[in-house]
Length: 440
Ligand code: PXG
Ligand code: PLP
Image (tube, rainbow, N blue to C red):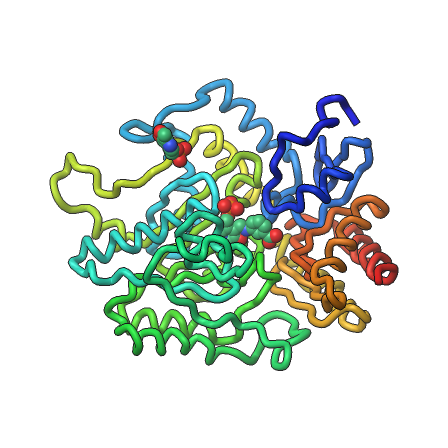
């Protein structure tokens, strides 16, 4: 290991067991295509496309070139009161791919910021229309909407909320999540059971009166919680209830957008169109942090009132529409189109599904779930040590098998490259099977 990597003491790692990690760090120093290089010089296959970020593979030459060129041309300029050409072009490009009527694009730097931005836009929209009483926000159990206060509050990941519970924003309720092993274990794609769970929203409308609810936010396919595809008819039902009560529907597509479901947006795959879509991650293929919030024109129009010299939305980040990030985003969109990436992704779905479901008979496995190129294998927790089995699988893959896999507790999650080679995908699952066979 190089001298610079000897001392990790100052580095507080995000979402990581720091003490355990620092005993034997797993450090990556390079990447190319579908492989990482570690500080020991090993080459590892990446089964997670970064962290749901890098669907085109790492260091794509077109994106690298665009970033190099941009950073030497315009490194930064403010986007409050002036802007840059790349942000303008990316807003146009992304809205052109979006569902009809979603004509507005607001830039952020991450998924968490996209979510908090979307919630603020929803609240501001109702107020601008004279319905300032609509303040209540509805999330879903097991939802992940990032780690900022808004997203954490509408989110439903218990460990992420626990310590901050008294400080979560007020006026938030949650509908139930859709996983039920008794009814939908080992489903391929969308479960047939569970559309009725959307009626939880109708109950909340009855309880609070729908006229007090501003917005509902869900991931069309829940990702972080271990991939929960929506039951057949579920998203349609949510849309119906929102329409009935004048509630905005927000799809958090930080994971579901840009080809993961073989379409530019998950909304298009399901044929259910929300009012606001949040994105990040794949927007720049993970190369530079960036997020975007896509908004229906009618929402934007509602803000466009009052004196023309006045700011309509008091919100924005120093790096909203950063030119280097936007250049990376533009190059990413160009590659998606030139290489037919979303079609490639669609063509891989069946192979991926078959590989995942071949684990159904494994002694540790209690569920397998998939939709698009999102997949999960859930293992039973080891008696008295939840998370240990998943953690061991991850480490064994990394150290002994030259494979990076992602585990959330005992659930292994998969986010293969949109342009994966079928035989490499197969090999990676054969390796994982060998690893699961050897762990207790
Ligand atoms: N919304 C959704 C739906 C996400 O998946 C965020 C918001 C927050 O984005 P940022 O860029 O602020 O992290 C996410 C992030 C996992 C995993 O293992 C998933 C995410 C982050 C970290 C791990 O599934 N998603
Ligand atoms: N904190 C301070 C003191 C600031 O001046 C700013 C931005 O100017 C922020 C936080 C917010 O930073 P950002 O715009 O990068 O989110």
